[in-house]
Image 1 (cartoon, one colour):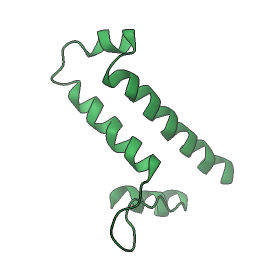
Image 2: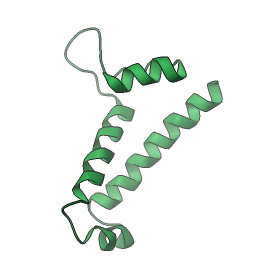
Image 3: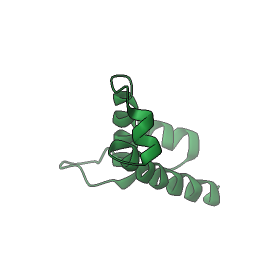
Image 4: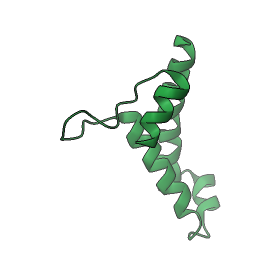
Length: 81
């Protein structure tokens, strides 16, 4: 709900992570955003995350992929603004 509210109020963009009816539709941006939060949170308990980032493996490789999805969405919003 927060993601949709900020998107609409702050940028005039409907993100669509909260649909008007169930079931929830697949939303690439919202999924990438949530997964990035999970991966970054996991860093608090994984002392080897910097090695994984350096080797670009596991969650760190997934993080890079999801950040690209978020970047693409944000650049589209900026281009429309």
